Length: 553
Image 1 (tube, rainbow, N blue to C red):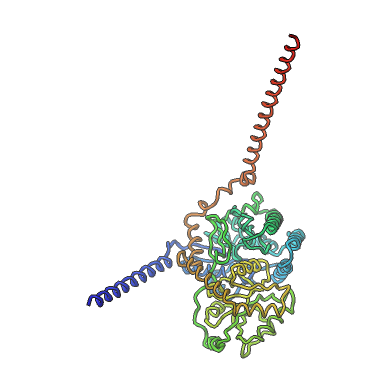
Image 2 (spheres, rainbow, N blue to C red):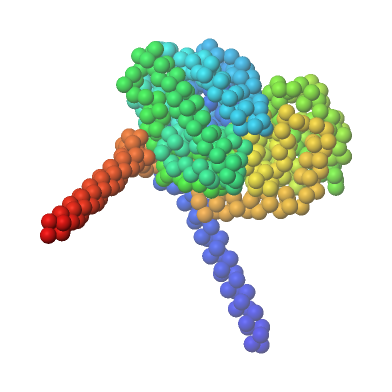
């Protein structure tokens, strides 16, 4: 009887505890859903005007802001507009004078040697910026915007409360400053080396923070640290002097903000939102106005179409490989795409090819291959039958693979994709294949490793759990981004800014203190030397006088 009573009490206790947990979880979810409501504001979103891949990230944030009651407008040239943007936002469009495809080709040629030695990469990038700093596609696009008087007057008349910018180009920051609206910068491609952090005076510890395009992890030997310093100096020259110098000349040409430097303007942002977190990025120092919002692209899967569900289930024990490759994949070597397609169609697994806007002619649906729109990618990756994800290293794709715990085979094309790939490989959740050395044997081995290597699967599951733990403790990344945007609209971001913005270069690097210490040391040595010389002279004079007296006696 006592035992039965004990079990009943235990059962009731468990029921009460479960009810308490569910109540707390429901309350927490409600708090997350309804955090600090505010008056509707007018927000201008300016995505990367030459990168359609990352515009989806701004669309997601914009939709969440609209759900919160804000009036969101998107500034874009007509080449980037689509039905989704037209349906959900107020569109402010203009005619672009820049060829977007040529910009993409320039980026490919610029970063083609991602796996070459450090010296080659430094010379290639430096030579490109030296020759083209005033003809860069981003710069020309910026000139189209700043020189459009009708557009500028329209933006001023709209009286926006905040501008959300992509930090890839200083143009949006200059535009926001020109129309006298405070702004938030968004690093949609994640943390690219140290350059974004220099602009916000975040400490860059070069012994553990790899520079952009170095290909290093946060564990470097002495020679790698030496190269990393060279990469850092190269980054300072290319971006802080040549790139910003080109934008300063552009401002002068349009007679805009001539008394302010582009470097100082971009640092006036209330926040820097980073599309990364510690599941991808290496640990490093950060400032309070630098906010992690990585993982926006990863979310729970929705129900799939019946035909697609049947196709995935038909794979049986062979599982499914998902391939999402940049539309410009064949721009480096046309045979690369043919090689990838031959390997994927020769394996026993089912293949899902993702349409990123331009499906190659050779890619055709058949019994073992199906083609889906990129909007369905997240839902497909969440299916149990998907075991490998072949992609080009876009950071949003990386977060989808981590969220759904799917090992990756990464073939990076652009420099930022190579940086993401290095980090995924360092965390043992992906295999990297260099596009310049892509062979059938390398591709087949990488797929085999991703399918059968238990370590890869265990690691990606572990990192997926780490990411989920971040989301449970903090707000989900999309809500975190919206929370901070609204927060600085309420209270401004001035109190988050480091006092380093008020210091000049000598003061920031303590060169004035070093100079003062050196002067003090010099004076101390000088005084001691004089004192010693004086003592020695007096002693010598005393000895000489004493000897003279002895001789006289």
